[in-house]
Length: 306
Image (cartoon, rainbow, N blue to C red; front, side, top):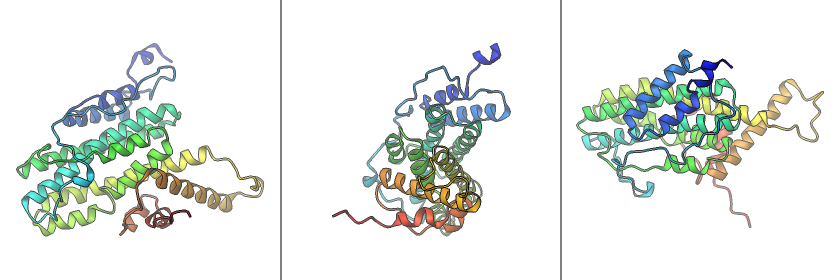
């Protein structure tokens, strides 16, 4: 390692600066700057293996948003009124503000701990940069609608799940970057949200969601699926009855895929409350690397054992 490299800030150190930035607008701006430096090669090292860094249990956040329990959140409405449109955009912006932290957290928390390859860091840097842009655009749109970020109550359910999955990368990828990425705000929900804004006469917000947020959320889900598969197979041990000499090609691929999906089901059932809620956006899920075998079994409640 060159002397200048040993002194320069690593990506993980920069990620911690983002996580420790309380103002969401500054968090997004700083995250964009760090992402650009990594993607352009200005930041060259992901981390120093010998340097122990503390990842905060909870990122720095301003207290300007009133937080309530998810069960106590007021109804957002269907975008038929200005207040409803404001509330929906506010909810989306709040979710994106947490998505920024989730992306930098997985880099800082698990990238080092699991010695992930460079592509892992790059993929989630891109996700983090997208989420920051989504937040900034949605917050700006909220102001155009006559409101501001902090004007409505919100919940921090996304970070509750992050805390629950802070010890297991597979759990974090499954719940936060696959299930929540789609169930909470993305692939299944956004098409309906877009239609509601159009029906309410707000084509500007609908266009923002349809042309920017929605297609990029598909790539974010794809990153979650990609690295779930990678980490699952990296630690995979062949079954006792599996012959490495004959179980190859298509047969091996099917065996591995089955094991990955079973592991995904186990992670979601352990760390996600309740079944997944249909209807599912099959086209978008397929584009993100999810076939129905990944999620349809999770839409059914398991019977309580006798």
